[in-house]
Each structure stands twice: as C-alpha cells, then as structure tokens.
Image 1 (cartoon, rainbow, N blue to C red):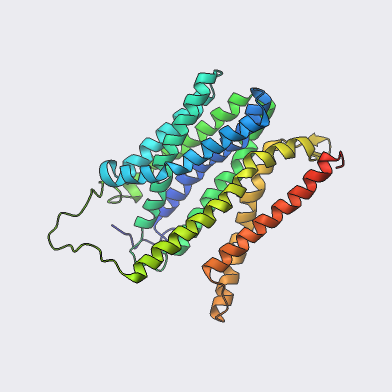
Image 2 (image 1 turned 45 degrees about the horizontal axis):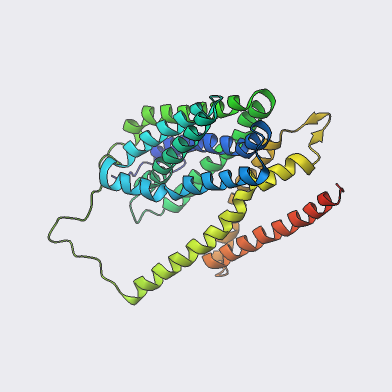
Amino acid sequence: MPSTDRAFLGHPRGLALLFGVEMWERFSYYGMRALLVLYLVNGLHWRDADAASLYGTYTGLAYGVQMAGGVVADRWLGTKRCLLLGGVLIASGHFVLALPALAAFYTGLALVVVGTGLFKPNVSTLVGQLYAPDDARRDAGFTIFYFGINTGAFVAPFVTGYLGERVAWHWGFGAAGVGMLLGLALFVWGRDRYLRGLGERPMGGRPDRADVEPPTRDAAAGRRVMALLLVFGFAAVFWMGYEQAGSSVNLFTERHANRVVGGFEIPTSWFQTVQPLAVLLLALPFAALWQSLGRRGREPSTPTKMTAGLALLGASFVILALAGRRADAGRS
C-alpha cells in the first residue's frame, strides 16, 4: 500500500532504495551501450553500417519489449518478481558478453534485452506505487528517481569505457554485469524492509467483481487516446535522434574529435557522459524556471516544451552536420 513515510528528502524510504537499484541498472545498460558500437567496429572489425544496424536493433528491442514486461508483471509474476528476474537476466547477459565468442555475444545481447524488458517498466511502476494517487509528492518523487537514472548513466562510461577501451573489451562488459549485481543485491536487501506490500502479486486480468462497471467511452477519452498516440510519434522521433549518441556520434568522436588533453587521450566512451551530466546540472534549474513561470501564469504547456526539445535536438544535428562537412574536407 502507498506510504506516508517522509524519511528520504520528504519521500518514502522505498524511493531511496529504488533510486539506488535503478542507478546500478542504468550503470550496466549505459556502460555497455557506450562500448557496443566501438567493440563491433574496432574489436570485431565490422563495417560501420552493420554495427549501427545491430546497435539500432538492440536498443529498439530493449525498449520495445518493455510493454510485454508490464503484461507479464500484471498477469503472472507481480512487479517485484519481474524486477528480480529481469535483473538476474541483465547481469547474466553482461557476463555472457564478457566471454570471447561470437555466439556468447549474441546470447548476451538477447539476455540483456529480455531482462531490460522485465526490469525497466516495473521499477518505474514500483515508484508510482509508493504514493497514493492524490499524493502531491509523486511528481517530485519521479524527478528524484530520474536523477538516479542519470547518475548511473554518467558514472558508467568512466568505468566500463576505460576498462573496455584500455584494458580489454570484455572487462568493460564484465564491469557492467558487476554493476547490475550490485543493484540486485541492494534490491534483495531492501525489498522487504522498504517495499513491503507493494508489487507482491499480479493484478490479474479483468476484475471479477460484479459491482465493477466496465470503463465508459466518450469523446474526451478518445481525444486523450489520440493525444497519447501523437506523443508516441514525437517521442519516437526524439529517441531516434538521441540514440545516435551511442552509434554515429560515438564513431565520429573517435575518428574526428581532438581527444588529447595534457598528454592524456580521453577514451571515446567518456563522451557518453555529456548528456546525463547536462540532465543532472539543468534539471533543477529548469524545474525552478517552470515553477516561477507557473506562478505568473506563463509556464509553457507540455506540448510546447516537447516541441522546444525536438527543435533543440534538430539544431544539434545541424551543428553535427557542419562538423561532418569539415571532417570530410580534412579540416578539424
């Protein structure tokens, strides 16, 4: 049941637990993501196009199967069991990736995809279950949780990237597995302490109570569904651009960016820390800005904010295209 606990920054202690668990899961995901294309091109000597194709397939599946993970939790396993099983599969996948065999490589990727599908949607569900539907702390709780995601994404490339690029590729993959094991250990330690009564049983299928009325359909509900589908479309466009960071931008950085500072050559994968660092630095100022504008009745609508984000993403690729032209012409 929802908690009125305020021991963690005014929020339930379960939020602190899920913050840490998700931080380590994202450490494992983004740590391996920073290395994947570099390993395919430099370690296995694949063509750029083939490496990008596999990368796109992998990331698409990792996010695409999450709907199935939610169904499995709701109908059969419950949220906590899905979280535990997903974490085990993710850790196993990273350790299998650490084995120097092509069959192990594909098997490891498949395990990470399935594990992510079980883990990712259900950890967010547990965060929501910490709060009653009318609890004003809910949005702030998800903001704190989002900090955990980006903390893991920021730290991961420094560890897995250095090990993978400077020691051995499989050391980097293994380090990602260790990160997921730490998240699993934290979850097992704290789930009965701080998440008692949450996500224990599946919700099942349709309610069997006779006094539960079926949902009604009206014009307003239809408009909300259409708005949701529209958001899906814009979100897909955004993530298509965003995920270039791990593929084309990663390769461009390695081949054309001056990465030497004071005699030290910065590993290519370390540049994957820029985006999560920007989130960590700018999330609170932007939240304060929206609150300030909101008090004056001038806060932009959510669609306006999304449009601005897409515009900035497009502008970034204009800059990258100009940099690419200079690189193609042999200029730095």
